[in-house]
Length: 211
Image (tube, rainbow, N blue to C red; front, side, top):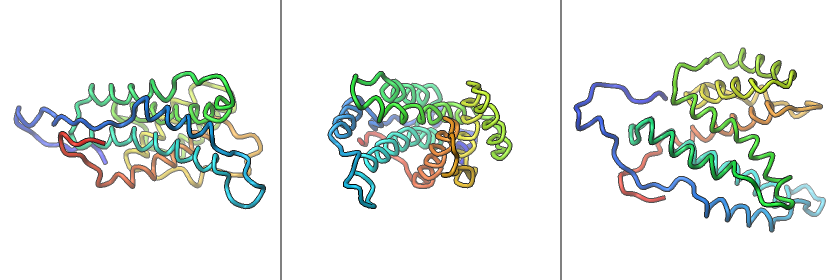
């Protein structure tokens, strides 16, 4: 859904102030602590190990938090600069260096996959992004195969299109890829973003409400 349009008076132009806490350092630290204590091995049965399930929830929590900022921008609760600043604040926390230890191998890949979340949100707010998802996926895969950093730019275009309502990326995500690239991880994250935007369809906050 694009941002609401329409002519407004000067008083109506100013976005209503909110005090919603989207993500903070304490929340990040609590997740890292929980992950450091989680079992990633399991008992060898069919159940997904506790740590693996927790890692997905950890990533989903960040995705939802960031997309809430975008959703409220769509609802004209925030201006562009304030929206960008709030996204940057979360990005600084999520992409901060990890403490030495086993969490680097566990959380590091999540940080890499979330690069597309922040890039896509910025692209969506800028507007005028490419909406041809099929062509973008083809181009992104080719760039990823070449090891080009431009694959993130293409992934951000796909993510922006999905935030705007385009369908992606279940049919492009394959479990049998022998050597998946980071671009494939970004497509998985974009699929999560698409589901998150559906869940936020009616999301809004009244001025002064907290998290």
